[in-house]
Image (cartoon, rainbow, N blue to C red; front, side, top):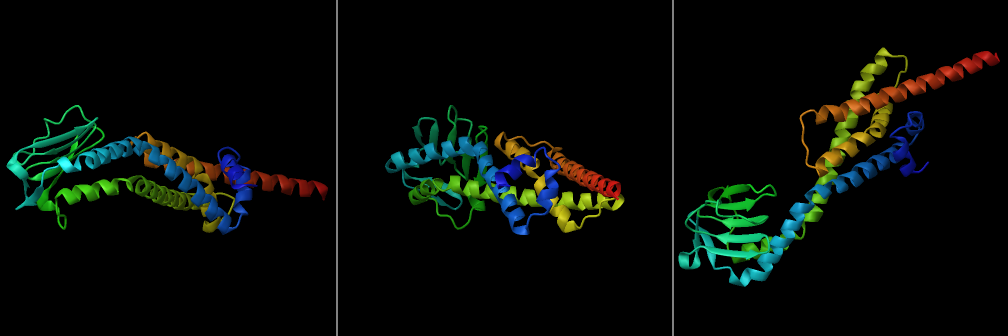
Length: 263
């Protein structure tokens, strides 16, 4: 059975869990890394607006860098050529310098903005709010035109970095879910008739985390974060493992009855 078929069957076929249990550790690992890696990468879709804004911001900086006045941060305050505010705008992006204020209320009708204020650097977030970082809190950074040029160059790497981070997060979330599911399922098997080792339960738990990984990726894409999500992501694989164990027990009982009938 191919890994794709295993993925599909993990969603509904509890009898197939017994076959998955017989797979080698290598095959189980490959299955887990592929599922978590693919859906981790897909969860980056939720960051597309941020990425688009970054691209437009990069274009603004590249096209208007020559118009940026000479500036620096000295004694934790912005110093600018002519000591006058400067605004550069292209499309829905804005680059603003103002040595007299840190008030962001004047920045409107744009989707992205970098604002060098009097005592702080401000970045517009996708929801329109601003994150603020005071110059006094930023170390080992020399703010000037070269900083802007370097910042623009780094924006092209953001998509790949975001994909990598999301893949790692997805793998870690999957591992945590599988481990907790295996621990909980181990307690259930002690009370039931089917005795399985922790390693076997961990295999089943990895298979059972397919749906939670899909749900987790969807939540990342649509940027929904509700307090019961973590419990749902654990409850689902626990229920799947229990159902799979019950199916295996039913099959074993059916085989035992057949053997007795033949005797």
